[in-house]
Length: 453
Ligand SMILES: Cc1cc2nc3c(=O)[nH]c(=O)nc-3n(C[C@H](O)[C@H](O)[C@H](O)COP(=O)(O)OP(=O)(O)OC[C@H]3O[C@@H](n4cnc5c(N)ncnc54)[C@H](O)[C@@H]3O)c2cc1C
Image (cartoon, rainbow, N blue to C red):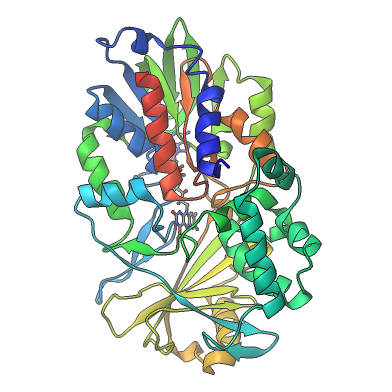
């Protein structure tokens, strides 16, 4: 059996045409290409670092006034130095490149695993006092064993249905399904009715025990961007440079930015989310199959609503809780950070995220209070500060991460990966570890390697 990662690695080579069309740099290894990279998220940064190490001249053009993209650490309380994540949170135990690079950069990873509590149908269940039915636990174990023997054809068939349907077809009870949906939808950012069964099952069958919710970078995940940026050279990363036009002709790429600047290169790595990619004026135009694929792929809606409290009334350092009410998923966002105050993040998805993102602090304080009341009584008076970031309306992503729906993993992703003239594509949406920082890094490094041949 090939795992999702192996399959896509093979697929990437075929899709990119790297084995068939050697680029000029693989023919003449002495010529180092000049490369422009669009986007200083983890994909673009990883690509630049790899190319820099190989002696290439690189320039990253980044539209925001900061690097890191969807990795966005925020100090919610300067007096106690409490850092939370408004974007990517967890580093997975299986995320080998990210972990290796953290070691290389001297960044410390600390344990960020949680023990999950549940508030469901008006009742609070502490960790250890709730669970799936024995029937479903046995059934799911069997399904995992079956998955281990799946052929690629089985997986393609699985991709054609959604995760909700797959669970229903396998006899999950209504209660088990409701709880699974509450939990799994936090991984995909939308109700599991919208998620490819293959994308979901591969994630659960091939991930670490805690589904890659294992570590966090001490001091904030944005430190990774800072460290890699220093190695690339901050003079090579141009902020507030939003790319608006790409011209490819005669083996060269010319790039135009909204601020009127121009850049020329031998190769281009486009490491931006699909929403941004479609806003660029491509000359010549992108192939129609790519435009179709770009239009087909949706992104998940996630709102991170951080609430700073005057004390940590949830008591357990490793507290998290899933609820079936507005707040959806709560976790201790200041875990293992010393201080009297502490923050919980209410992590909402889909329509819930849309609603929460639009309300004012007064309304949301009530909402938070209602969501936590069953477990902890009234907590509204303990609220010190609220901060929220809604990725569904982020100017450059319009979503948190890509959401592969039915049939899309095997049909849409390979098209999106294909190189177009001298442009290579990278980003979390193209990764075996899709939706993760690791995936972004992997695709950035792969694009750099393809350029170098
Ligand atoms: C709420 C949330 C929770 C998450 N949780 C986790 C988690 O727990 N663990 C995990 O590993 N991952 C998580 N992720 C996913 C992770 O953040 C992403 O997979 C990864 O950061 C994506 O990196 P990227 O380089 O592909 O894209 P981005 O980080 O989006 O980088 C793309 C960059 O391109 C720039 N750009 C866009 N258009 C242009 C243009 N025209 N010109 C110039 N620049 C442009 C953007 O400003 C951006 O900086 C989460 C993401 C979100 C939003």
